[in-house]
Image (cartoon, rainbow, N blue to C red; front, side, top):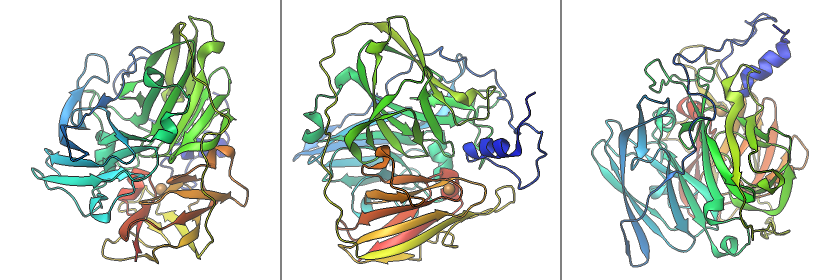
Length: 479
Ligand SMILES: [Cu+2]
């Protein structure tokens, strides 16, 4: 066995937001990673499906009205076994499509035995429609959520946000794409239609019956990587350009994605839609809830090529999570698409009206009752942590003071711009609108957000879902 330095060991363990007892591991120990209990699905054996498109039941006065059943279903993750999952309308995962300027009324019916709260991540919605942690739908009840879709295009998503159940609910499948498009985006000559492909990534831990095993902070056990609900699938492509909208819906896993042959990808978008300009990237770094949109040009490859999308943030060469999916170039096709030099123009940043600081920290997760903190406080829905005057534009400095765990930071209601990462300007990939930003151990990130839409109470939190469940959330009130 090759010698593993303590530094790389720690880095590997941290890579997946892992559980690691402080100072307890000898220098030569391999990471304490359980092998999957079942013979896990083989790599690149199943095709990657599209998410299930959920369509509105009707359109009333220009509003698309949906009726969505939140329910259990079964899906084949390990070939030959049926795995029980939680879904929006049976989609594992599901996909909603919406258009800027066209409101949605989403009736959610809770057929589970637990409360659920439906949150449109990245959505600019009234606080009563935001799916707050305490504002849940009881088992057997229904609720209508109003999504005005005033905001520009963005690859949004929907997930459960019920206090202390969110982590397990999201893990078991309550996450869906909500792709909001506008004319500014649609008129660009980017790959479209069947060449515009959403990919939801996550990791899971399967037990010996092929069922999802949920334990808090089980980053070492979640070694099966799913793309659109299938383990390590393959995806057949034509030798032309494709647009991929990639969401990391994992609870704890950070993906660092690259093409196995080292070719660059063209990143065109992030959480809040298109970047101002496309940029060439060697890798995509996605913490939980972050999105990246890329164009990959398969015309460089002969028909017959098999090209892996790898995850280089992993536990080493025996870690199945180093693999993600594989593209199979199966045929040629016409390609009228192109990538414009300018994708959008973002408005200039307003004058700064206030500054605040936030520190993220967490108890040692190996201790029972471990909690997560923002500025030393655990989430309390009855407490307002941050009062913000309506119309203000604030600079928030967020530091990860945790010596062990990466975190990230998500703001409800608004997008923000990243000003600095550890004192340096953001990379080109981070120059767009963001709603979630990764903050590694010891890092400090500075962002600017403008609170000029709704008034009311909203959350900000770490989006490592297991950390949310540990209370690593705060409440802001825009007044
Ligand atoms: Cu966290």
